[in-house]
Image (tube, rainbow, N blue to C red; front, side):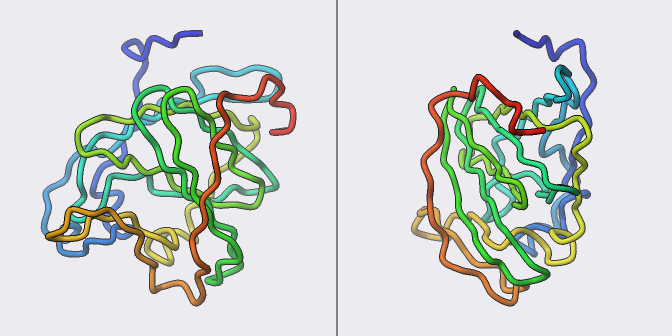
Length: 200
């Protein structure tokens, strides 16, 4: 079902909401407030599940690619994310306090889906400076987001940045975490699963 977003009012995440979780502290400190991404919440609801749409703008946050704030889930909830337009990197981390037990990323393009396993926090990154990223997600109606760990440790356990001079993108560990394993990569699903009952 095609959702007409022009008839909906999004929640807007601004730079002022994100400064503490950015890699580039000079940019975070000195840049004027701006829109970073738009969240259209609960655009669809069925069978105990809810769907939202997020548009992450094509912007560089200093050295870092634009991203969502990041969150964990209260309770044992999984989530699916499907790319509608653009390209995404979904970074997922399983943590106990400030120790990361597992971390992996999924790169996905239009039509592909990533599953966020239960027990994993996650961040969505738009790795483009000129194409906006549009994603849709499904999760249980009673799933609630928890931002406390990401806020306390000033971001996820890895940042995705452009190296000055070389123009090469790379992953940088967040030193606020006590222990961070090496990042591994998994393949996306070619499409969203037909049966989403596992999200409940």
